[in-house]
Length: 498
Image 1 (cartoon, helix red, strand yellow):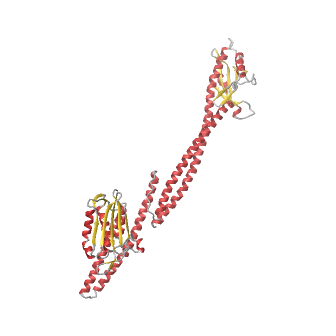
Image 2 (tube, one colour; image 1 turned 30 degrees about the vertical axis):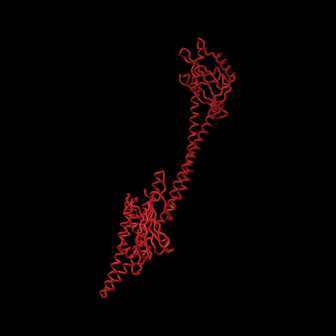
């Protein structure tokens, strides 16, 4: 499994999660809607119970006031006298009310009253329908006669079975000399309470719908946020699958950030595996030539060649061995850079002494090609970065410039600070870079032939520019090698502040 297959697999998995976000929102909608409906239904039921309890509390006060009023009209023998009560009720029933009880209007007295004697026989009824009937078995009468609290909810008419045709009835004992002489009962139709309940129910429904709408809107925003976050990870994985250099997305949610880290870690691991495979393949390919040369030279030496020819083959063996040593050393160093296992030392240093040291170390190579060096660098010019890596990068470019310079030409080295950045420019006079090689200059092991003294063509390890490119990458800089007039110009550019 290579990097592209692994990242594509993650990308496809993340792509499904976007639809999961929409599904989650739908489930959230159903759950929240069901919960809202359940709470609303439960709240209406509790409101209904609360209104009945509140109404019953008022009725208890009212019926006891009526009982006290009737007790004032009892005869000396304790006989019931409802004349005053009858007059009061008739006057009350005839009154026209203009009461605005919140959103409900009340135009008449809806309560009814009846009085029973000590045997439970109705002796007064404000409706006139139950006079003379035996109510001794009704809870309000039976319990009140026994000295307890009596109340009931019953049908007003047995022909219609609905809450609107029911009435709440509360009784209170009528006493004389500590003896119960009768019961007065106050009846209120539930229909009058239903108007208030309907009004409050509509208000609660509007409130619940508004709250549900806000909650769903917030849930929708959360779904969009979640989908966008997952899409960022999907795009991240998609670009990695195509080999693009992409920065890991910044995510607020820690779990999604962990997912992005996991994707990046997987990429690193797969990259590392592929990186090792490529390196082994490349190293094997590059070592083949010197190993074959050494093997051939050894076989010829063993055939008893003259001493002069043996010396020549021994020189070839040493050259091939040195090439392999340089190749292995540079590959190890480049591998460290590419895997970022080298600690970058960010410090200030002067470039002029570094350039001077590098050119002095190459006096012999410059003399062999009879090259002169023209250096333009202020003594006090400072740079920031890893002194060792920058020095190695400049050395690689100078070595390339020397190798491809014409004899008796001039090598120009210019250093300057530009817009808070350091720029090193190395120009040689020599053959131009072929068109086919322009795109491959920074590939590992790609090298153009160069002529040494005596006209012998050789090739380098092909790792120099790859190394320079990685050094600049670690310094957030760039390297640019291109044709320039009668030669080639190489430019290093990196920020002066990291």
